[in-house]
Length: 325
Image (cartoon, rainbow, N blue to C red; front, side, top):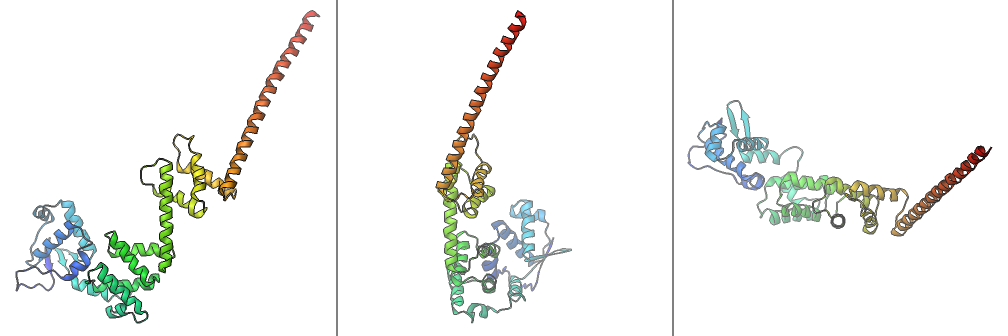
């Protein structure tokens, strides 16, 4: 493939790398992908023509990795495919284009100052100093301002959003957007909402661990198993005490599963049983009815045997009469 670079300067024998690369791309791309980018950036100065197979050998990387790296940078519009090869775009131009996209109409200064709310500017400054070492790319200002408007988060929630992603080493736009959507869908707008959300999550985690321990499960629960627990705890509003009663019903089962437990708990919910007392009374009633049924069955069977025996005696007596006649 043939590599070219816009605004190529041959006055110096150095390969320049803009600061935008460090603020926007370094943390998101894998080490191998960065390795590929830096080398083709170097080659592009001299309009070198190199094949992907040769690139694989030169960088000591698998051919598939080279292909994935090229596709990654192409998807991020860092390089553009053409008939004869690729053009390496200017990173500053890419970020400038993002900065002034029509959907984000506010300028960097407007987003940072945010004349409608003086606290928002402080929140953005906090994000910049706490998670970007004070060198946050200008495009982030517009993204943050846009998320403020889209999700209606207060300033503390926005800071908490970046802290959450930062602590998981996932401080990139797609991940932040995904978390923000999840919080928004859970009606989180204020820090109090977020605090309640965390409390519910902590409670659910304890519930899941409790159920896993009781069932002897030493692996992570599947998404479907967690959905069952959410159903019992959130939809039905059942406490651990009630759920534990259902778990005890599995002791006679060789391989108890969540579907079996769900049938038990769903039956209680359908009967509008909401407390441990009402459920225990229901179980005692079932046990009592079961005993009565067994007693009736036993009595019926005994009567049936006695009746057969009496019938046999009667038949024997009639047979004797006939023989004597």
